[in-house]
Image 1 (cartoon, one colour):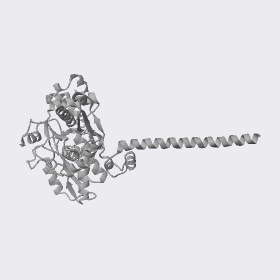
Image 2 (cartoon, helix red, strand yellow):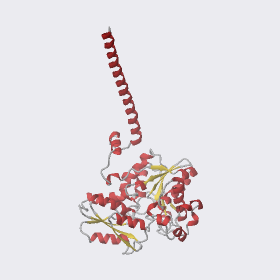
Image 3 (tube, one colour):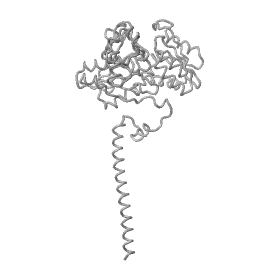
Image 4 (spheres, one colour):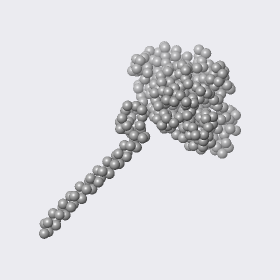
Length: 394
């Protein structure tokens, strides 16, 4: 009898273990199914790559600096969205591995030269840049084993020059003169590349690899992140690559999307798209890397439904609004883009979605943007609310 009881107990125990194991298997299968559906919602794209492989690609380790360029978050800017009744969304390009949207163009220009056989191992990249493209190139050249030589206007921030040198670039600051002057920083960069063996001139303003990378990456990312719900696109233009590439892609998906180019003081872009004439509006701007006196090859033929002129007073006010109200420490060109998005949203009316970009972080300009003396000299201190003055340095 005792043996029968023990036998029954063993059988019952085995059955219980099997039932628990089966229950766990069913539970795991359900959880996997749910997580798979969630991954499909979060990472679905229009490419032929499977959802599973995309998810694994996203969570897995990247192959160095180069593989991390792109795929930045898209965030809602709360206060301006509330004021306009629209969703004003910004692509966080300051979160690129090199710190700015120009990482995309820098990588595209270098890889395009490699594919064409123009840049060989151990070669040299020469570029004229206001800073951010050069910084992106410095990271990429280090990762790929190239030398970098940068010509830049001597009006650019000290932080950018110091960072470029820290990254190993040879930096030559030159007087800021118009593109028509043979001593313009871009012409000097071109001549240096022509006289250097195994070297390329990046030519970011007229090298359409710049525009193409935004057609191929930034535009599709925005489309996917908004699930195709975009009513307006705007940003400033320096080379024209970001604005034109994104505008072209978005228009290819929906021709009714309003594309608006934003322009700072001292630039000709606003006048050109309003009147057809390249005439400067205002004298100069605190923004760096945007504004232009000509139509670059990257900007030629880009869809432009309208243009907005954004004053420095509005841009500097937005720099501090974003910092103190949104927690975003971004530069003046990023602030200009948010002001432009606000204007576009106002023109469209409530219920629309307007997208722009946050180009880079303010740490590249903080010796100016956070300086009471510099802001006073530029007659901008009065345009920063007094409650934000505690962020400033004496």
